[in-house]
Length: 133
Image (cartoon, rainbow, N blue to C red; front, side, top):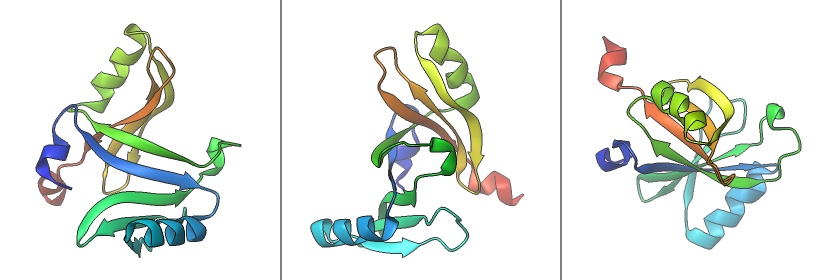
């Protein structure tokens, strides 16, 4: 991920949640030429999609708490403080779909709907330098 994608307000990640990770990986590999790297410590079958050595997206199984959600692509927008941004959502007419929580070794995120109902995730990435100390 480039530094510009970690700036407040930047779209920084795309992620497919699907019922069939293997089929999705094969489809996008053939369609887009992606190479896919499985993440071994993820129980949802997470794979990183790459162009050359650049990570461009993730593919994972739909989590059980999503219920009957159909397969869908989702986007993440970087924010400086996900907790503060989440507090603003409802005052601006939006709705919290999934309360803030951690993605281990990545960051803290939440899922929101804007006033018109469009859904997006907000994320504050962990500062790797601070975690190591």
